[in-house]
Amino acid sequence: MKERRKPRYVQIGDALQAGIEDGTYPLGALLPTELELCKSLGISRHTARAALARLSDAGLVLRRPGSGTRVIARRAAMHCACEANSTEQLLQYGKASQMHLLSARRCQAGTDVAEQLCIPPGTEHLHLTGLRRTGADGHPVALTEMLMPIHADTPIAELLDPARAEVALARLLDMSRLASVEQTFDVDVFSAAQARHLDVAPREPALRAQRRYVDNIGRLVMVSTSLHPRERFAHRAVLSRGGH
Image 1 (cartoon, rainbow, N blue to C red):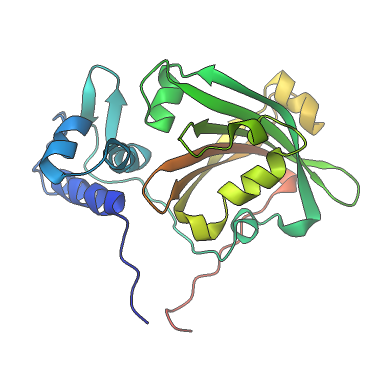
Image 2: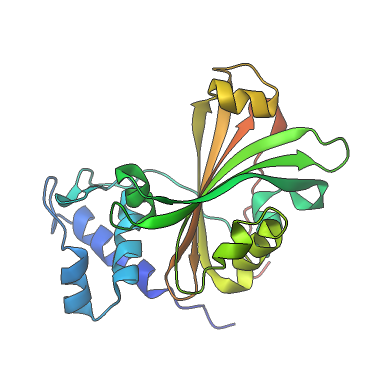
């Protein structure tokens, strides 16, 4: 079977990472700006942002509005990439749980959110918060914050409507529409407000799962951050040889 070609933003991100690793861009150096990449490579602003975001996620660069993208490490942090046939399989919740929307609003991006979404500070985006519960007893298993840049085809009205948001999210995150989903797992603690939603004690350890969804034309669709009580989530990955 013919190997699927990497999306353009992944190719550019890989090339820049190779330049960091071989010293073309030494520690402390500034990478080309989004506009410079657009002009030199003939790509869109979305593609340039997504490429640079890959380097930021890998811990190789620090991006600050007005200061550029600066190299801070020669080697990427270790990560794991897994394939999945569906979003349910990727999230490992299956049909045993359901997302309940707690809040949804349009708001302007501060510096931190702008960095995550690769948009200028002050740009409008969508901010959704949902609680995932098991279907059998309604027990809460995860609190999820969803940040979404607004594109021309983003179904804003549906996503802001609690009655329609779940269906709209499922459609946006259908694996046939996505080029990649990157997962990062680390540890956090619950704030008092977060703990109340999940019936745990404040400052209790939490497993944090962040996912970046990129569509088939290289646009960032969503950055989600889910907090799980330690005893209510386990990540399982199966590694196999290609073709087996």
